[in-house]
Amino acid sequence: PHAKLMFIISLLLGTTIVISSNHWAMAWTGLEINTLAIIPLIAKSHHPRAIEAMIKYFLVQAAASTLILFSSMTNAWMTGQWDITQLTNMPSCLLLT
Image (tube, rainbow, N blue to C red; front, side, top):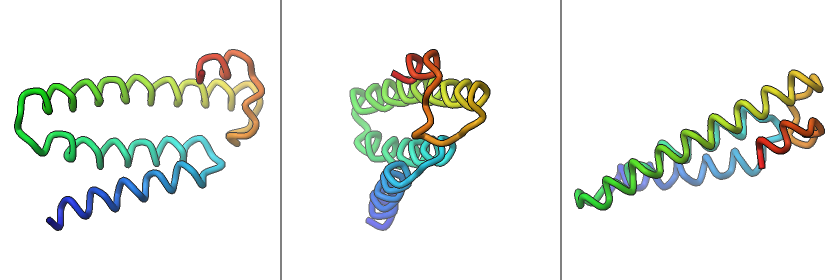
């Protein structure tokens, strides 16, 4: 029961970090906290479908995380800004979308 509560609190913390961040690195950190919190909750039941769902979630989230990091680094390289509101570089915007 304590572990489940800790994972749920971590999930809420990660979501709060993502919502309140103005910096791409902090938004990415919040998403990673969410991933680390949700994977054990998905895999709690030892059913093969739950394990399959956990692996699929992890792979999709890892690909999305890579795209977010690459898009934010490209935008920072072109504009010199890491601010989320300064996504003015078109290739970065398309990659993020």
